[in-house]
Image (cartoon, rainbow, N blue to C red; front, side, top):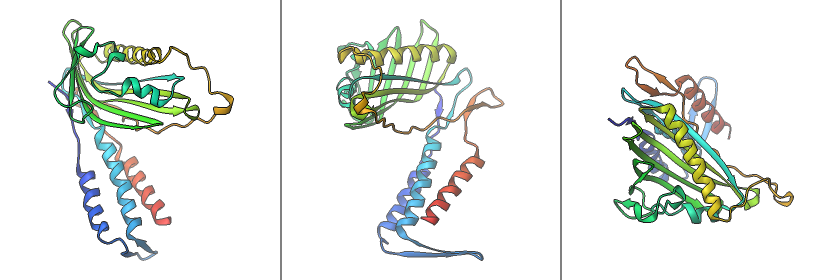
Length: 272
């Protein structure tokens, strides 16, 4: 039985609806008043407020996970720094079908659709486990690469089943482009979460090191003095799980915190 990945599209629809409205009222200005204050907003300011809130709600819902009975929630992050540019790393990890850097021969990977296309799944075996990974998102620039998968795994010999709604690889440029940080973060439900956490951390670390081996095997020590600037990209941190009365694991955000964040965004845009 797979975990239920609750994905709420209301934020996207909310954003799209108001985006359409304000696209047709570009120069409109809105006057909002209360007993204490009066504020004058133009359509762009209001649209930005809605966009900020929509993105926040979208991120909150994207990480809502409920594990079924017999499975528990887990997550892991592996970070490896390589003395190679994002473009160099992308040349190894950027082809969806080609996961030789995972120790899987190219011919051993099957696709159910077009390579490098969102919605396509790759199917293969590794260490006795049957794995299916569906491409959910992929973004590449010369200084940043992001790939997110939905993965499912069954390993009969290890008596492990895992369902992973968030399995992301992020490659970020540092040292003015002369090095890269590989961040592999995964959230999952598993029949043996502790063992799976240990196993996936070891595999993710080994795979990142193998990328460096393919590129020449150099080790990262520090940024050169002339390239000391470090640039990173922020990531969303999955919320902490809590067990319900049925023993299932639920992921939820504290709505007091959420309300405070939304209020802060509105006030920020008001003062803008």
